[in-house]
Length: 391
Image (tube, helix red, strand yellow):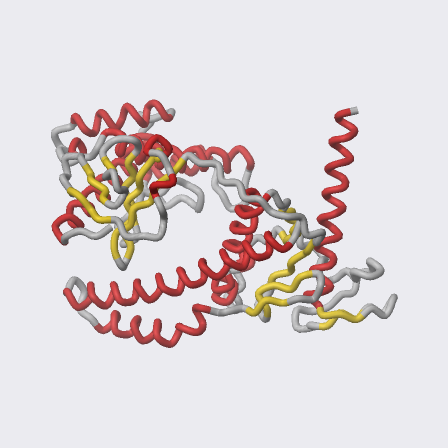
């Protein structure tokens, strides 16, 4: 979104107001004033009518509702974790009582949002307007941010205005972006290839499939780590609150953003290639949150973006009609893919040698074959159960 500095400052105020509405709804929930989504909507009206917060009324009413929905979504997620007794999450009654007393609850409890450079404000179907040529976006709420010119590769002429359900303004280190949420069911045609594959992700290679093909791990963070450390040192030498510190922080944020974008673009294209080349894809259901607890491998695991790769696989799988099956990772590297016997090996052992049948293969190649076999068994069991229910 291309605009002037004064327009950007007005967007900052709108973003700050949206964050205030979200935090206020969570505070009202802790005080027992909000007990449902409708109560969260009503609380937005209370905030806008309160003379102590005159800036709230300047934000569009539907934008206030959108941020109330964000707050209630975090509350619902907390209740869902309590019902499912998710490990590491705190019980509802104890966490609420601790938060009311001011002590810090554990992970999973709705938190108050603080200032972050990456933040957003969300509008529903009002408060904004697109020009007829789809190149200009105008905000019509009382913050009077005005009209912004849109720069991007997406062709908005492909969609009707009725399909655009929400507009989200996102602030990042390198500028302000408009994100359009469109009601559109995307489907792509794909010819059958007759191929099925299992993928075992790793650090030496990004993944190894059941045919022995390997994709190199690009290690975007590791390659730019020297430059990032240099920018971090420059930031630490600046005085807090100074303009030089803001500039140094912006340069560091832009460098991290560049790494993140390159990584996401790479895994997106790789996932699409895998889906287009196969009729079934099997992967491991890895718990990345548990894996990064290893402080020696945490940075490398985060740099590999395994979970983002899985998200893109499942996304393109729905678009192209390719099933993506996640199997449990237990013993996929230990069992022999040829005879099924368990062959214990350490993480440093990179070659699988089975003493029972003599099968020798790369460790990751053996694991990929086990992943595919397990996925096919799950698929056969699922189809058999559905047939029994039909009968």
